[in-house]
Image (cartoon, rainbow, N blue to C red; front, side, top):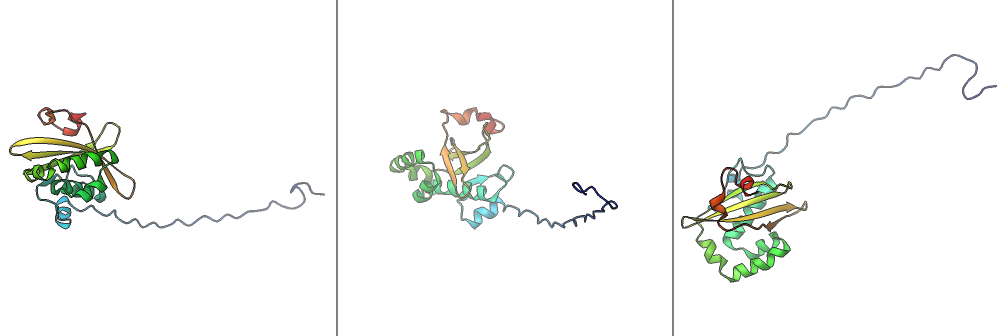
Amino acid sequence: MTFFGLGCGGEEVVETTQPKPRTVVSKPKPKAKTIEVLKEQYSIDARIHLDELEAPRDETSRIALLEFFDALLKVNEATLENSVSFSDKLELKAMVSAGLADYMDSVSRLDLKVGINPLGGSCVMGVFEIDMDYQVQFWGFSTDGTSITFSSLEIPPNLVNTLSGNWIESYY
C-alpha cells in the first residue's frame, strides 16, 4: 500500500530547465527638439525667449508653453480658450474686450521662467518687457495626457522688483 507518494522504488529525479536570458534591445529615448528648432517649426513669435537649460525636458511641454505664450502675444482667442482653465476663460474675455491686443502689441520681449511649485506642480513665469518696464504673469500648468491646461496664479503688485536668483523659488 502506498500513502501519498511513499512506497517502493528509488528517489524520483526532477529535471528543471533554466529559462534562457532574454536579450533586451533598448532604444535610446528620443531627444527633445531644441527651443529654437521648435520656435521655427511652429512659427513662434520671436519676442518669446525660453532658455534651453530652464525649459521642460519633454517636447510636449515645450511646445505647449511656446504655443500658449505665442497665442497670448497674438491674442489668439480660440487657442487661449482651449488652453486656460475654466475659471480663467471669463477673465480672458474681459481682458480681450479691454484692449489686450493693444497691450500685447507694445511688448518688446517675453522671457519665460519654468519651475516647480512647492507641491510639485509645474509653473511658468512670463516676464513681459514693455517700454523698459516689466510686468509678470504667473501660470500653473498640468496635463491630462492629451492636452495641457494653464491656470493663472495670483501675484502681488510689483513682483518683478522683489525677484532675484531663481525667480520661481524666490516667488515661493
